[in-house]
Length: 165
Image: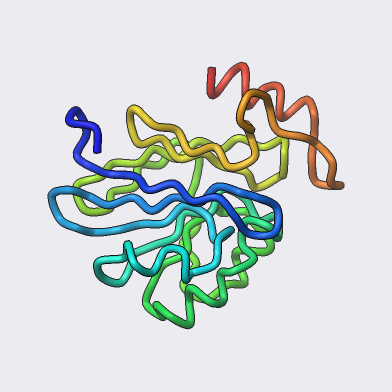
């Protein structure tokens, strides 16, 4: 844990596309939240204190929501948060739609939602200062790709250069 923050982050890599998922714990309240459902629940289990309150979904590509049903079976009251216009996420139980520049409070943690289309039409980033969870809008060392029919290179450029940077 960084002494300048009121949270800790555990990073996990796995799933079928070697994605990152994160478990964030509020130091003040013990509340926990996950970022993306890319990793098997068993990898998180020993680090979960109580039932996680939510999963923050960065976008609805299958590799980022693949294990979502498993998480909801284990934690049926857990909220699923993602972009408001996501046609895939809006059909999921416990979905809470988010909009650009919305503030989200979980425990004593304050997230800012940043709509960052380009890699996918429903991509969003979550800012928890000083950290930014980008999903596939940015990869380690480079920008995300535009390889699906709901990707757009001009939108990705705008998201990276005019919103994130």
